[in-house]
Image (tube, rainbow, N blue to C red):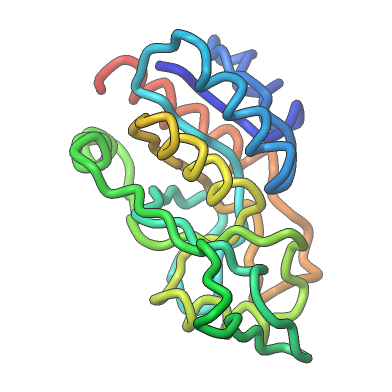
Length: 204
């Protein structure tokens, strides 16, 4: 299993559990460059991007819940108004969607379901974490009932696509966008993430 994580914050607890994550950097730019650099080398799968994320209002996800991405959207690319973000004109096309549906996703879902409750659905990548629940609702609705917000998934998915690599993205919920000022449960989320990754490492 070849494991990618955005930050040392996520890497350290996973290392203590015997996993060997590669830190690629936080945010769309660093993550894209870090992932592409690794994908350009000789690596073996399954290849997993793992980390924490915020659950969108209406997703039904709670702290510590696990989710796999079926598609990644780039939520911040477009024209920004007060809360609503619009697309560019058709004459200015922009890549904003990257599918993560492939046989490995189905296999990982079945594997995880043997031990963990798991949701599968769209994720949204943003440059700035959403602090306004209304904006969270808008982003989720605009992107087909998205489950989780993160800051790296779309860029890593595009890098994987360009290198003909099947990528899995697994995240645990550390915070609820509907409750933006509540403390983030990072340790709890990473512990659950590590358990799920260990299971995948042993059974996928």
